[in-house]
Length: 325
Image (tube, rainbow, N blue to C red; front, side):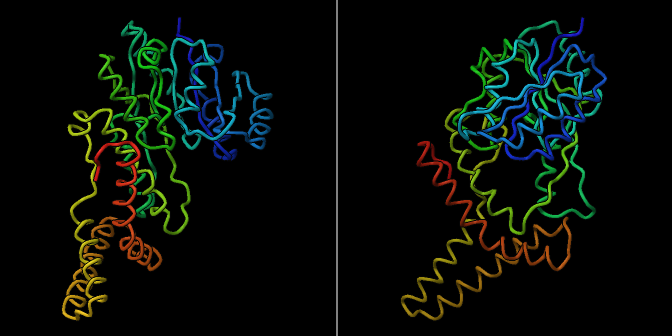
């Protein structure tokens, strides 16, 4: 018999996206009596609760709605979800993803073939984007190359119990999936790639300069590095690139030149800084859109990203006592 599966979806204040995800899950080619959907809100969210309640009344698949008492991040939401289920197999996706109809069946087939109770699986993620894409779309498209992401994975209950679930110290949607992957590796839990388990991850419309806000997530690189130094060095590159430090150095040298009235130092430093900003902008525009709006955004954000990246990595290094700058 097909295993009973619980699909856990963390969400917060995004009912429109969530309902699209739920609609995709109701079209699964998997028996409706063999899986359930558990939606967990990352904090009180009455609008989403009402939307899920109305949607679930029309569906044959059981849909449960839970909520954390306060906002604690998607890792905590996922933990609440799988711990409130008795399923043999736990599948994770995100509220902005659209699982393909064969998604659950593909995970189920691999689970039955292996016959093991402590495995994890990672599926294939597709990211549609415009041609040429924006820089933001290109960044999200990196999910297609990721080894393991919680937007598209499944683990057995026993595996989650062995590693104590997801680490709730990751309070943002960043690196908690790598931590889950590395915990599985350390505990000898084999991770099976299942390309037939496919989800589509549409790129949401982003506000101008959105990438600047994303830099805050870099603080959690330090936490992951503290927990898994060897695996981080093997699989990931954390520290900001040398280009960032060079840009900051020349900018600060220009300020020093202004303060000391050293005109040659001022002109040389700020000219070099500007050239580096233009070079960084050019690199980001190589395979992305060249509309005036996008070029302006890339120029502006290229000047700020190095400062924000180094700041947040430094903040994470202090907060988690792990050198990551």
